[in-house]
Length: 290
Ligand code: C2E
Ligand code: MG
Ligand code: MG
Ligand code: MG
Image 1: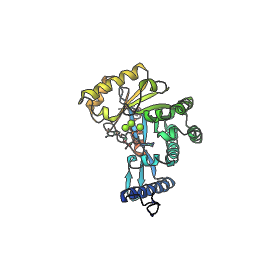
Image 2: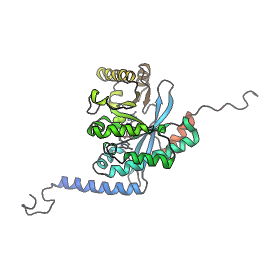
Image 3: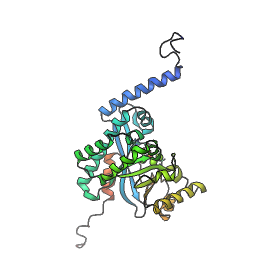
Image 4: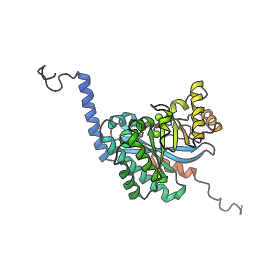
């Protein structure tokens, strides 16, 4: 139609569409540069066992440390990256980064080191090369599967259901746990979901934030706790911001939690310091002599 009108390819684009297309190309080019310059960094948010209030693991959450713009959150670039195969390069880079970090912590802490949970996009999860990527990253950093967990959304599972079942089997054979992120917010049916041999669920922040405020959200959280317990799935509530919410979840038998009440996502160095704080106190030297 643009030709009929005698214009160029962009003739039927209105200025905002054209602007958006240009902005997108620019973002993609900038992300390629960011990857090359190692500006995409995982931050680590502690995941606590609610009963003992003990640090069990970290969720890796990407930030773009931009030399001019400062710290850019994933909401500003992950979705766009998912529209192209760029997300596969980013995902591979971040999975390797997580393995390198897990290896560092394991050198210091051995088997007691915290696990690292890595978020996977739908496209990564459906990528047949995923298993090779996992194998090579784990081998080059000498990290066992039990040091890692993968977080996927229910929507990304159902979008590629047949493919994904094999992927889940292959991932779990390697010892990595698979957990469903943002549980209850995507499109899913229980019967469909239960065909997938998963290890755990994460309750989305929008339910958690409403605990004790909104009767319906609280009922949904109660139901998820019951479901997880009877299916023997690990359960982590995300977005815990108040002691009241933490206490409610603990009292109702939710195993794990993460949120600003405990910690924000921390840089790798800050996470290391946080870990040192969480280590058991050394035997006080010379106490007997006092
Ligand atoms: P998500 O995986 O559900 O991560 C939880 C989000 O909640 C994170 O936002 C985290 O910083 C935030 N959060 C944690 N505790 C609290 C709290 O107490 N209060 C509030 N208000 N927020 C809290 P973030 O880091 O901005 O990440 C947003 C989303 O971006 C993630 O949601 C995930 O879907 C995606 N994402 C992050 N990192 C990666 C990555 O490495 N790869 C992929 N594919 N996606 C990622
Ligand atoms: Mg997540
Ligand atoms: Mg989540
Ligand atoms: Mg979420």
